[in-house]
Length: 195
View 1 (tube, rainbow, N blue to C red):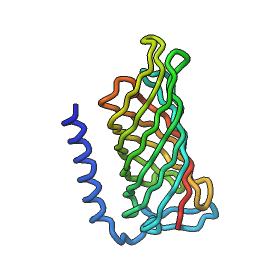
View 2 (cartoon, one colour):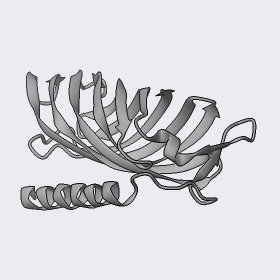
View 3 (cartoon, rainbow, N blue to C red):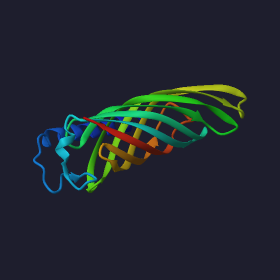
């Protein structure tokens, strides 16, 4: 399992490094241009050297029960479509019979592309670590767990303002060292573009 994860991460970053060299200083075309809310064209190349910061909610269904996390994300666009950054979350774990808290953070890399004027697809991979402390009534004790976190995601961004995006995404929250926290999550996020 660990070899598979390392292979996937290596392939992902190799593809992204190649994408960086191919898309530097791209002349805008009809395919790479976007429009703002007033109908003026904004070229995708305007994302060069820009960054986004955002706040997020994550609903995660795991062996520990339904969980709700809140957090942030910060990314910098290295090319018109490729970005790198960091993320962090904290929140409540579990149902009535096993309740606790979890905190995690990590680095991320992603790629987006336009499908309509103000809608684009975003996908990527976050990797980092986290830790949890919870009470498990079935075992009648306090459980401490944690370790590595790998989270691939796929989602859609919608422009809701001149410098504001709304994102919804699905991700697979993989914790290879932890039997409680692996699961599928649904994420909602609002991003703010910083010049």
